Each structure stands twice: as structure tokens, then as C-alpha cells.
Image 1 (cartoon, rainbow, N blue to C red):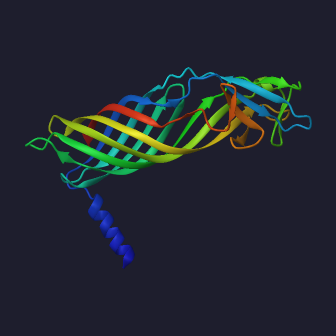
Image 2 (image 1 turned 30 degrees about the vertical axis):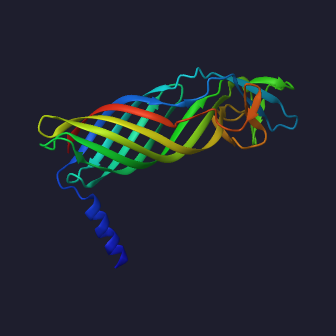
Length: 251
């Protein structure tokens, strides 16, 4: 009985009274990036450990290209609707996320064709940043060992910082009609998230090419050096303002 009640409530909340819609939008996303002298420092796990470091090239460019695809189950005016969104961003950091949430369609004009849409969504996402080429800072072996994997040459190992993040995104949109059923949308949102970070190493071993290993950013044998101070916090995240212009069609 309880399950039936919850199913009925979900249907009542999200069933479509007019039509479903699909939207494509593009714009800009602001990223939280430090503009400092940043080095990544790593002590490998070989019998005689080497200390390696790389210069992280962050220009402090907080603007990224933002592309999104939206699916919406439109409700009656002044009623909630379901939204699903997938988006990607491309700048100094490359990443994307998938979101599910609810919004409200609030009419602004007498003919009810111009409307304001506040929304809130929950999301999970991923982004990454290349950390540059490793160089030996202490000792001097050619190979590098990460966990149980020994790479033949540290200069050929690709190192990147990867973040898995989750959070919420409040947003506000303005719908302007185009034709009878399509509309143009001006969207603004703000991402608030927490993340789990790890370092990826990809390189060749004596027996296999393209072997990948991971170290957690919280591990004792690695850190970032920012303006001469060591930290185990990522020097960037995806939190920030998003602005897009899109077109939506009925489906």
C-alpha cells in the first residue's frame, strides 16, 4: 500500500499535462581556478624512492565553453515538472555532469507564453586536468613505481588530477516563445559541490603499454605546492556560475 501511494504521488507530481520538451543550449561556465605557481610533488614507491615534481600550468582562465542537453516533462503552469540534464564544459579543465531535478513554470505575461522557471537539481560529475611532465627532484632513477606497477621511464608517464564531484545546482530561466510550441531560453545557474580527488598515472611497463594506476590525493606520498606551501586540496573545482542560451522543442 505504501509503495502504491508513493508511485501515485510521483505520477501526480511528474505526469505531463501539455508536452515533453527537449532543449539544446550553449554558453559559458565559470570555474574556481587558482592563478598561482603550482607544482605537483610525488614520491614514488620503488625500493629507493625518487621524488618527482611537475609544473602545473594553470593560467587562471576561469571561463569555459558550456554545452547542455535538457529533457523536461512540462506541467501545468504553477506546477512542478521533472528535468534531466547532461552537460559538458571545455576550458583549462575538461569535464561534465548529469543532473535530475524539479522546476516550476511561472507565467509572466497575460497570454502565459512568457514564463520564469526557478529550478533545483542534484548532480554527479567528473573533470580532469593534465599535470604536466614529471621531472626528478631528488635521487635519479629512470623508472618510476606507482603502487605495484613499474613504469620504464618517468618522462613518458601521463599524470592528471581527476575529480569526481556531487552537489546541487539552483537555477533560474526565462522562456520566450518562438512559433507555437518552441521557445528560446535564457538560463543562469550556480553549481555547489563537494569532490573526491585522485591522481592518474598512465604509461608503459616492460610487458604492457598504457597501464593506468591511481593514487588518492590524500595519500602521504604526494601533494601540491602552491606559492611555496604544501596542500592536499585540488587547486581547482567546478563550482561557479553558468550562463546559457538555448532552444527547446516539443517531443
